Image 1: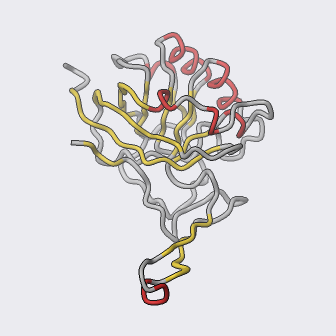
Image 2: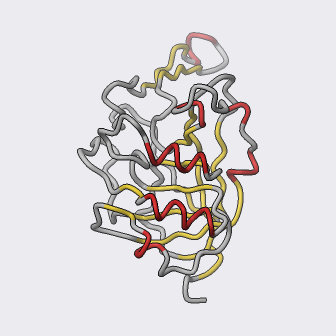
Image 3: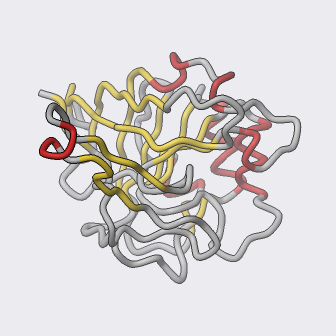
Amino acid sequence: MWMDITQMLEADIAHWPEDTPFSYERTVTKAESGSVNIGKITTSTHIGTHIDAPFHFKEDGDTVDQLDINRYIGEATVIEIENSKELGLEAIRQFDIRGDILLIKTKRKSDTTVFPESIPVLEKRAVEYMAAQGIKLFGTDVTSVDAIDSKTLDIHHLLHERDIMILENAVLDDIAPGYYEFVALPLKIKGADGSPVRAALQYKGDLND
């Protein structure tokens, strides 16, 4: 059974302060058209559970439509590091990581209506360790891989330099640490810097197996 780890897109979902809030409205009703309901979405490309394309933080980086969808399908390890300001090397390397996707759960309960004031971020040594382990996609249950107030986005850049893709705002509240099959496909938006995804996990085994 596949488990949905995607934030619900709804009117009160939190967004980056400078971004476009999410909205959905029905612009045509079945009664009006005689056949169908039709809706319209207005949103940021970084709303809810989403991926960052390299173009998001690098002018010559690949856009969403240039990304290989195979990078967003595969075997994942989910680990849990709670109540920490930093996702450090020592905390990460105690786990047996399998597959080329790593997701880190940092909290027990997600409130998708509140934009956080601060979040735990990756230590640079942890990024180097993940690269050495063959990780090709890193995902987190918070809104960014860098500090909220970062302008240089050092971790975004370092992950890109080590060929590791980025997934942010996964909902891992009900996901136990373990091994999973993973999928989170971005929309094929020409020239886009990011995309919402529908992310899911399928359980394969415990970390101790």
